[in-house]
Image (tube, rainbow, N blue to C red; front, top):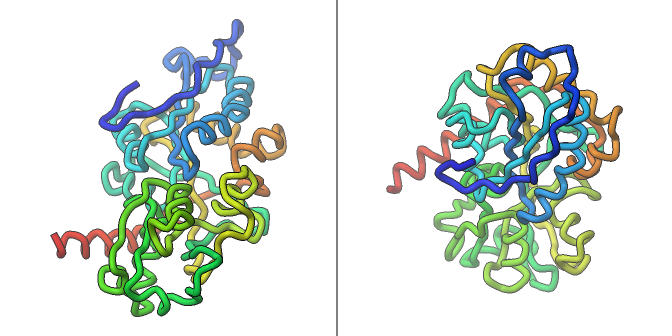
Length: 302
């Protein structure tokens, strides 16, 4: 599979020898299903994390599932737009991009419930723990790392809400840049490439920094949070609305049943979330407004 951005795939799971009789209408046209993900993790860990979910969906729906990770956030949107994948798990700002280029041809249907019971998360500004920076004011004239132009917590929300707080990134920092991923932002701050950065924070026990500590990628306690954004709605599960109704119905039912029918697969795929809640386009209207304002400002500068 190819798009304008490379996608990395899970190995194709073996096709079951006997397909379920129910729903053979869509199975006759779809010998496999394809899921795209935009992940904060490195390629190896992001792909491996989805393997139990892929196996669950194969058992549940009776056809193989291939999971693709784009090399950047916009790659998943391009794959959806060009009908190269049927489903995706993407960030809220990435959904805003998908809706802008696809309109009603893409729709959200679910979002995770965090371990703290919230259906939202935060963007945080972090610094290296042994630096003197304690506030956004302390970062005047310092360097700042964003994650990706289509990341909600890694760019859209911090750039918008820092401006509203009187700290326009274009003038407050000596320089800004895109690290390429949330993990790379943390690493860049810890190695001194940037003085501060933005990443996502779900709860005191879940988030990018905590996960990197658990994996041994960074020392525990090596960062300090100095700013937290307003709440962001959790990342949506989305699908192409042109898919057969029976396929959409079966996929949604299988996803919503995942936390109870295969809690281990859900725990791995969703990084210890508590459950899954329904999602609607209206849940992301504020994110869409933030993304549109950011884009308008960037166009004015170009």
